[in-house]
Length: 487
Image (cartoon, rainbow, N blue to C red; front, side):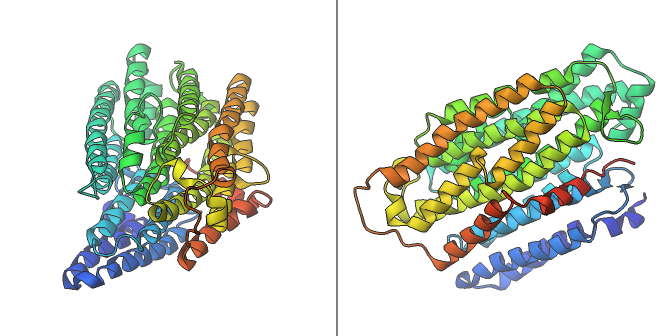
């Protein structure tokens, strides 16, 4: 589709771009004590963009801008997750960041990059969109300038990102050399028409997975994550754990089901590989390594932000696990779990943000006696952590049921067993936080005040965590529509 005809499919991105430019101008007119309005208007712009995104649901699959992007239902879902995630992060930040308006504009620009990542259909656009998100993330990670940990985290983030992007670009150059194409669909057609050397193709895929794996914190490309999570401002830690990860998973899914494999016939219930190489086994090994490493190292953490970092690595492993089956059920399970993960992870982070600010520390030991000093916050955090574990009747349990069911139905029984064992391991370190809150005595016994704003937002995240554990059909319907991604 030509550029002019493509504009009608690009309304959310155009609106967000215009909002960024308008906010930059408005910011010049605001006094220092009025800068919070930039955050409020940024949240409003994202909410309006959600409306434009919803209008794109169930549109026919369409290549836009001469095949550089694709408009389909999976792109719509990932854009929704990105927009909602960024809105929540801005709401997180409003009480703490009131005079730094550029903070909110950087989040909007990163969100625009995630919108593009959701719809990429060309290897050049993959690199451009990932770099747009990455550049904003580096700055946001080091936003607290006088914090040495924040500076260190930002530097490490840049170095690892540059290396992984370079490796990925090298892999893309191999792919381009084999096919003479940059469009993913045309690469697929070229591979099937004129199959290249299998060893060279396998090497290219491994190099590309290094870049995509970095984005979703897949082992062994996860090294940046714990230090970045600990050093970044806590709202940005929460932001990195959901939005960019969802966009990275979308790019990875789209790449795997075009360049690596394609659907058999008109159905997406089964895929066949374009070249018979052992990609599913490689992904299975990476999934096991990711969730096992994340869970076992989390056992030793004493800092709650680092614990959540390794927890995030483990959850990436659970979602990668469902990719090995290469069928609609597996990819649908990933999208379903992404929505659930967004809700319960943000809920946990909201409590952590509000409590660490008041306690003056993000060490787990600082949470001693919180069950008595701030009961609502402690009980809410316990529910979110148990949901992340996958205990019934919480939403996380249903999410993991769908992930494991897809793996079992695909015949990967050992992989499913290892996934369940990893969930059991995760219960130990999540329950340890609950134990500290309810069974240990704090050296200082006075109550920890919780604002009405914090209680309201925690409740808004707590409600779906409880509700979707017993009634999850709305999320299931939303995500099942979102796997309409084929011409």
